[in-house]
Length: 201
Image (tube, rainbow, N blue to C red):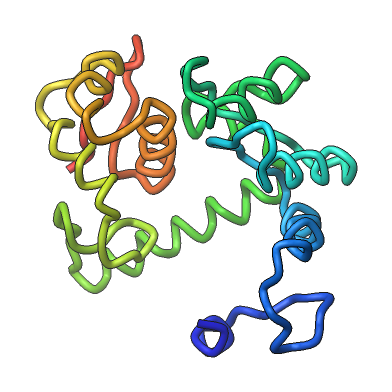
């Protein structure tokens, strides 16, 4: 995996010698690096004693933005985001909630990148099908994304509560929010007034 990351233009960043065993006691140190490299941290789920809680705390100490998706209070994995919201993290329901808080230079960079990608796709005559390419260049949707997309139609909006009801046997509400956030971010779906969603294609 590390070789693939580097080959793809990425980088391996660590405070430990290469080859160090992935010991649990090293995870908080890794999480501090993750939050430090980020503009902000979005917490989807996290139990009371979890690495997610540590990452969020590190982000706060580093003056990073902290966002959280609210969850069902009966779900122990919702403890993290719900507590963070009580402590002042931004309640996040859609990608716009994150987008509007990004620094101007970051938003401009993302917008320029997406505009260039759309232009390249237009010039090459490419079209995106439901389970092939997406606006961000990913080749496939995840299983959870596919499940959500099967109930979101391009010709008829679906309200968030109805959507959650239709997939509740397979996904938690927080997972639905996370998937909607991701699909909106890449332009696969659109949110309409009243928390209604439609597919963009």
